[in-house]
Image (cartoon, rainbow, N blue to C red; front, side):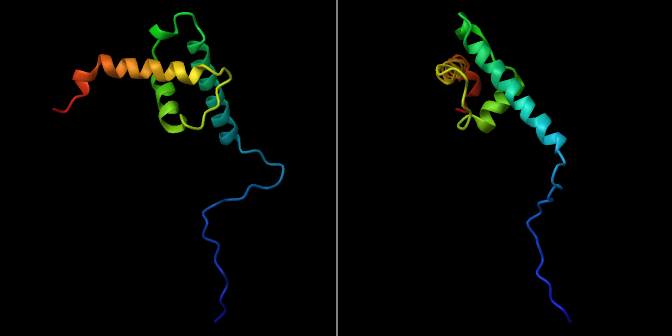
Length: 95
């Protein structure tokens, strides 16, 4: 009986020169959503804007690793989210 080592890392290697179109599309969606958040937070009325579901999901999943184009975007987004939570504190309370 011959024994061969099994490769069980569940990674399918792509051939050299073949583009992963789904990965490219996902990266483009990520860039567009980051740009959308940055644009909202650079408006003069940034504190009155809200995030849509796609932007909230992005912030929840990748918030700590996102590098926004403008320095104050992350701070303003945090302020908007904290204000929302304080306004709706009663709704989210489990007491």
